[in-house]
Image (cartoon, rainbow, N blue to C red; front, side, top):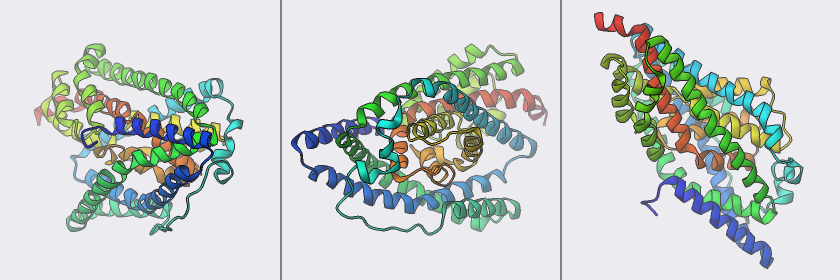
Length: 395
């Protein structure tokens, strides 16, 4: 199993969950379902405990690192990356607003799964309470204040502490949460199958995923059309040159792990070495257009299926916060959705079942979101090079 990637493990977990749930339903026994529900309850408690730690561990070093950059080039790169992320989320919102009411199945058949899970899905035999050390909003404010404070005061000692804390949290995600997620996903789909709603949910999200992938290609095309226009390059040739980076990201599920390939392909697109060496590693931690599209679409689909209102006033602040909260998350496979859990709970009001389903749905296509992110990094490098390249070469 160690040789298998996360996606195959998730698929195996989903299939096993459906099989166990179907057999339990047909035989009339709740024992296997309740055993998995017990595991899910404990895992969810641990996940809720780690959410504030993930927020602090990712945001504080991410914001503090921005204080070490080089003036206008740093500010412009960060601004362009953030604008790209927000535009991607807005595109996802507009597309979901118009298409999802048409393609999504009426959610009345399984709305209670989200609103009243205790009436439709089985609960575990017991649970272990693990209260978080602070609330989600408290963690966000604490992280922003501390990160900005470290950047302004150049508190290198404190920065080193939080860099090491980030490394600890990354290890917790990579070595505990991610390996245990397939079992969690198996429990979710086992319970949903036992409740008789999994078929509708699976068929619905197959359509959502198709839209997400199309939106990924659209935002990549827009990014390179802008970059190609500013730099006088053929955008389609530039996109073709970035295919190795895209394919590598699909395999690694990590923007950070794909940096060497992204860097090499960006230079092939004619970006100066000084700009590429600065922009690509930076954007690997702050540019998340693909992840934002996926999170926005999946969140809106779950909200619509559960009878919640996914209005612009609700979703746009969520998209704005996503662009900040996910800073430094791409270094860990699945890190983006882990960093977004606090926002899903505090801003969108997601329940435990909705958050669990969101994790499963996001991770099922995490590779494609990451591939979109890193491919877009090359476009941002072209844009920054068109603006600052000549000035950097002269200096």
